[in-house]
Length: 299
Image 1 (cartoon, rainbow, N blue to C red):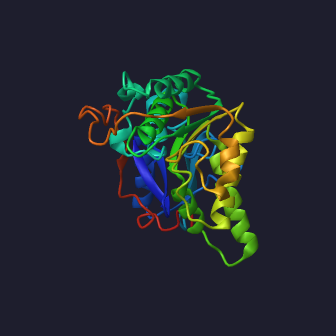
Image 2: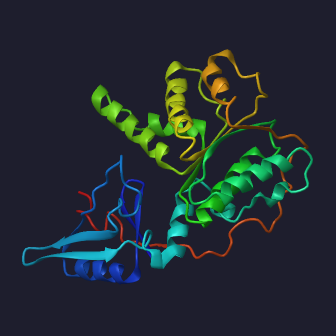
């Protein structure tokens, strides 16, 4: 498997045969263009945008041809590659791909949290519900969220871990002076977060104290809250129930529903087993067939 860079921070995975055909076309002096078009509101596979195939246009002055191959991410015969791709886009670090909720086993005040996570995992491929985690720093909230994301991805369920402030940074990075363009970009981001069967948002109370920041995060949470019978959302805060700042009233209200779990116990910082980390799953190789090598790709 090879990973191609087709634009700024945009990558797709192709199988070895497709990669060889692309290299051959490049050696013949043909300009390559990726033909799949993303529909931000509908596509289910981030590799082929839901088309099931990858299509490239190869052209020079003498000849034009199309190179097409099955998407290695959503092809059921290549499930291991789909899992690997899900993990790559899960928001986890590679050494977190193999994390499990077992690290909470037998720890005082944390058993229920592990049980709820296992319920979500067992409900794959369509986890449902609204889970709020409370607790001080270091007791395992982030670890539980990441372990749940990892387990669901391993089962082929698209899942994502994000800190609330990272979501806001993503939205700020697409700033556009044209209000219409800015609004469209923000809607696309919100729509993407609404699609994940499981979404874990950490540190929801640690965002900039501005009306825009709170409104942006709330719109995502509200969409997920309204769809809690169709998909699952887990949020975490360091504040205890009833202790959120007054301007987080919308969040406090939503956190009264679903399962509310206070994670107690001592800090787990530095106690994770050295055995946690990569589970031996083969990683895709990044190739030098980049935008520079393919100057018209997505141009």
